[in-house]
Image 1 (cartoon, one colour):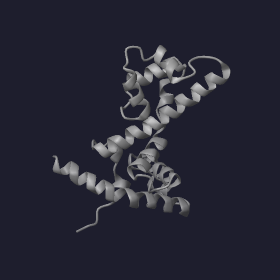
Image 2: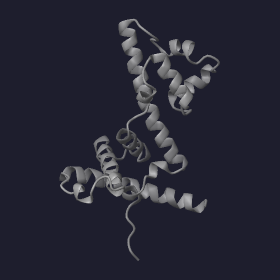
Image 3: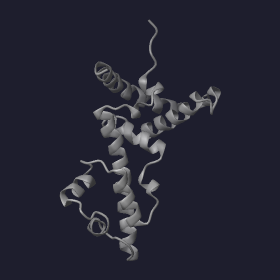
Length: 180
């Protein structure tokens, strides 16, 4: 029987609808938007302009929102809706797209979260870059020979991430298949 390639090498697993993956994807997005909002609020505090705290944002943006639910959003217990992010961006005067991580960062942080920190940040970033590049190669926008010549330390980092991810993804795949 031919050996199957690792899920982590071949699949856009971050799109799978499984609670662990959904939580990891949402958590990566949450840490990104929360850091951006905190940075903008800090700038506003230092310049004396715009909302300077989450309380200020609550007054401007979160009208008719239960304070307990806002707290849960900030702690990552609830997932921020598109409307919530749009309201934050509007109140802060930033493009709403700034509240979403770019593809690589999102995949890297999702990988880190799914592996529960077993794989280091640098390995996760290398893996995310590899997956983004490989996906372009698979779609024909890049050629396979462009993948050759990758520095050895990057290859090792990618393989570390794949080795950590694949057992997790195999379990998740079995659970998803059992539900079909």
